[in-house]
Structure formats: C-alpha cells, structure tokens
Amino acid sequence: MIKCLGCGSSLLFDPASQLLKCPHCGRTEKVEDFTDSYPHYVEAETDPYDPNVTHQVKTYDALLYTCPNCGAELVATDETASTFCSFCGDSVVLRGRLMRQKYPAYIIPFSKTKQDCEKAYRKKLKKAIFAPSWMRSETEIEKFRGIYMPYWTYDFGKNRRVNVEGKKSHRSGNYIITDHYRLTKEIRAEYEGASFDAASTFNDTLSEAISPFRVQDAKEFTPAYLSGFYADVGDVDQSLYSEDASDMAADYFRSNLLKDPAFSGYEISDTALKNQLSPEKKAEKLGYFPVWFLALRSRSNKRVSYAVVNGQTGKVAADLPVSFAKYILGSLLLAVPFFFALNFLLTLTPVKALLISAFLALISMLIVNVQLNRTYTREHDLDDRGLQDARKRQAAETGGSAPPAPENAAPKKTVKKKKKNASSVLIGALIVAAFIIGPYILDYIPWIFDGGIFIGMLIFGVIFIAGFIWNAASKRGRPNKRRKQDTAKAPFREKILTLLKPAAGILIAVITWLVNPVQDLYYYAASSVVMALIAWSIYDIIREHNRQTMRPLPQFGKRGGK
Image (cartoon, rainbow, N blue to C red; front, side, top):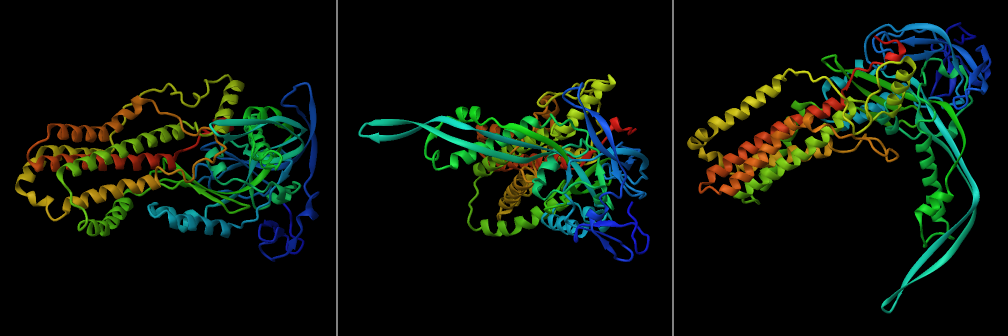
C-alpha cells in the first residue's frame, strides 16, 4: 500500500480526479509518481502456444483473497478485511494470502465513482417498476465493489492489394445487362482493441452487455491504480475468443471497404472479399478494465442476481427479477382505463371471446417455450463460454469428470423428484375447481357476462401477456450482436408439463368451436377456463424469468471453493 506523506494513512485511487487521494487529510498525489513504489520481479513464463519457448514477464506482490464458500478469487494491494463476496453475495470474511501476480499489458482506470455507479443503477431500477422492493434497499446498493476485470484484447491489420470482380446491372428493353468490372485498391487497415473478458467468474452476457470500453484511454499498468480497488484473476485462455475477434475485424474491414467510392454501388461477392480481407493478428494482450460489481442474494438465500456498471462509461446491466404481486397489481391498474374505453367500442360475441382467448393461449405457449430455453441455457452456463472453457481445462488438468455438454446438447442428469411449489398447487386447485363448480355457478349468475365484465377480463389478459412480451421476452440486457448463439434448446421432456397448460387451453377452445354448442354460456365457460390456464402460464413465465435473473449460487471449484 502507498502511505500518505502528510498523515501516514493509505492513499486510494480517486476516479473523479484520477489521482491518489488520502481519505483523511485530503492530500493528493499523481499515480505516475508511484510507478516504482511497488517492488517488481522478472520471471520466466512458458509460451502458451510453444512449450519450448519462454518469455520474461513482470510480476508484483499482491494479496489474493479467496471466498471460502464459492472459491472466487480477488487480488488487492491493500490489507483490507473484506466482509462479503462479490460473486456469491455471502457475508463472509475472505481468506487472504500473499502471492505474485503478473503485470497486465495495460489498465483502464476507473473514471466513474461509486456515487456515479449507484446513481446509474438507481436510474435503471426506476424503469424496472416490477422489480422486488428489496433490490432498492440502500443496504444492498452500498455493496457495489470496484473490480478490475481482466480482458483479452486482440489487434489485427491488413496490408495488401485487393483485386475483386464488381458487377452493375441495368435494364435495356426486355433485357437485363450486367457489366463486369475489375476493382483494385491498395489497403492498409488496422483494427485494435477487440476485447473479451478473461475471467470465468464474469458471465459473458453481463460483460458483453456493458461493452464496449474505450481501449484508447488505457494507461501503463502500475499497482498504484489498484489502491482502494480489487482485481479478478484471469483464467480464460487467450485462444478462446481469437476467432470471434478475427471475425469482428474482418467485418470491420469489409464494411469500410464497401463504403469506399471505388467499391460502392457494385455487386461484389462477399466470399471473395472475405478471402482477401482475412485479418492478420498483430498482438493479443491482457488488460484490466474497470467494472462496478454487485451481487444480491435472494430472500431464500439460495440464488443470486448481479448488477454491473462499466467503470469507464457508466453503462449498466442488471439481472432484474419480477415481483408477481407487483405485476398483477400493475396489470389490473392498466386494464381499468382500457376496459372503460373499449366497453363502449367493442361488441364481443361468444365466438370472438373464444378465439381471442385461444390466440392469447398460443402467444403464452410461445413465450413459455422461449423462457424455458433461456432458463436451461442459464442454469447450465451455456451462455458463458469462458466458464465452460475454464471447466474443460480444469477437468483435463486434474483428470476429473467430463466437462458440461456443449450448447444445444442436453447433459445427462439425475432426475430428482421436485417438491411442488405451494403457489403452483394453489393455482392448480383453483383450475380444477373452475372445471367442477364453474358450470353450476354460471347457471345462477349468468349476469357475470353482462355489462362488459367479460370484456374487462379479456382486456386484462391481453395486457397481462403483452406486458410480458415487452418485459420478460424482450432482448434488453441480452448479449450483443457479436454473439453468434446465446440460447440452447431445452430437452422437450423438461418442458412438456409446463407447455401442457396453454396447450390444453388451445385444445379446449378448438373443441368448443368445433362442437358449436347452441347456448352462449358454453362459449363463455370455455373462454373462462382458457383464460385461467393462461394466467397459470403467465405465472410460469414469471417464475422462469426469475430463475434466469436469480442465478444459481456460483461454485468455482478450481479455486478451492467448497
């Protein structure tokens, strides 16, 4: 740690001023003045691509803190007793030991303060009106921790003469004439800073959601930047994202070449351009990027949700579950004005009511299917290539069990009988009761379908589902476009029971429509049952959404976690 020359306290890096600042007397110092304050060492390291080649690397002494519960590791230069884990959210004292860490190639210092981070997170929470109230607690928000996350960055270049065929077509009478041209240009292209997180503890969906970082603002690394902050230990192999980075560079080269006046307006084979513009890798480096990190344990203490803020740009990404009670209340309040508006405009016939409810059941079934696939992907970490790669290499090194199955492949699992959720049992009982006593009640109170009451029920159903199309089924916060595939298909046997509910509603509607009963009461009764099944499906959708946003507690066994 760096001592203040004024009072002897520890100097901490201040993102607002980009200086080292004493929290007690306020004295400030330039980071550059303490570049050599930490002792460093030069050690030999084996080349990852050629075991016969070694490189000289620079290292420094640091404290390595390990969580006794999940095994996550954080590096710090200060002897600060940490009372909670940033990855599993548990209130524990991390175990620390002294060890040497390798210098990264560069570092992007924090420029957003903790106050800026908390403000950005609160702003996001304001838009998440259905988020549980406990997530807005000041006690929880104050747990944001500044962590330098390791990122692999890749640089590419291309210096060559491009020679491709271009075409232009025009119509002359009844003929289409195509002119062929030879397009030639000498290019000198550079693409620097394609970045991917190098820590298996940092889920790829979150790291990509807060990208990009401005790599051009990077500084030469010195441990002084870590004063008051932590750093994660990079454990993802640099070759994992090499192909993805190359594709990004190739797309960049092609798009810029096609904007050139000498090439624009011509029909050019994409394959020909791809072959001639294949990027040449110039360098791959490990850098530290600033991230404000927050882990929130669920009320059951069995799952965790994450919120991360880009410490350079302030961009926020968060796992935000939905409060079922808030969602019900919000839907009811929103349905009231629609009810009064449409009650005077819409004439609802029994057949229309049945068809509308069947359509809503179909929509809910599609959404449920998407949610189940996303949940399966998240539960098996199939959306995190870094973690999958780290586990695979760990298994290979230790001779342990085989790594998890790849995407779109269902891993072999032991089927355990799950205890039924109390809410699911209650909803199921209500559905059964509706089947048994519903017709008798309708005989005595047929007025329930008069005065537009049933119209109100349908409006509520439409809003109920439309809201979730916007909220849970939207791709906000999902991986960005550079990700080729982010969702695996869950095995059908794991989805069938959940999908049966809206499917049963569709079947009931179809049978009723085919039978074509004389009395309208049967149409309304069938529509009521279908709407009840839809409500049950919406409960499943919210449950699956919350399983995605409240992740299983992490276990980084390779790091000594129990």
